[in-house]
Image (tube, rainbow, N blue to C red; front, top):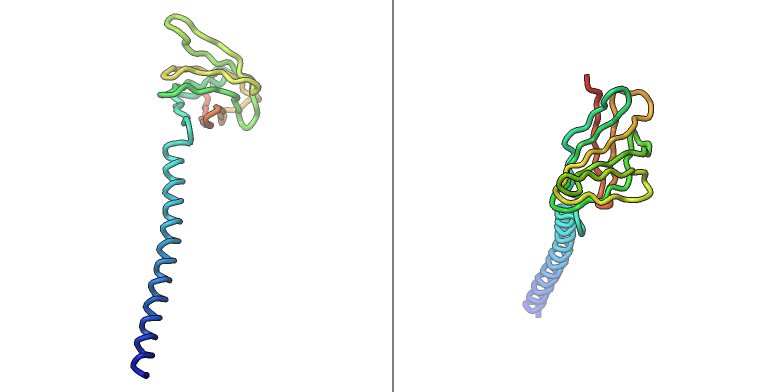
Length: 152
C-alpha cells in the first residue's frame, strides 16, 4: 500500500497545481482583458469623440481674448467658455455657408453646433487685466484647453 499512497499524493499535488494555475490564468486574463477594453474605449472614444483643434489663442488689445479653432470629421456643440476658471459670455463666429457667417453668443446655457471641418473664432472679454489666460472650451463631447498670451 505504500506505493499506491505515493502515486495518489503525486496525483493530488498535480491536480492542485493545475487548478491553482488555471485560477491564476483566468484571473490574469480577466484583468488584462478589462484594461485592454478600457484602453480601447478611451482611445477610440465612447460614442462620438471630440474632434476639435485649437489653432491659435491670444489676447488682443487691452482685454479681448481670441481663440481660433477647427472641427474635424464630426460636428461639435460648444456649450460654455471659461477663462481662468470663470464662466465668460463670448461670441462664436463661423462660416455656415459659402459667403455667410454665423455669430452666436455662448453663455453656458445653450449649445451651438459647429459643423464638421469648419474654422471657428471665439471672442471674449478678459475678466480683469492679465498677460496670460487659460481658456477652456466646453463641448458636449469633451473639453479643450488653450493658453492665450498677450500680443506684443
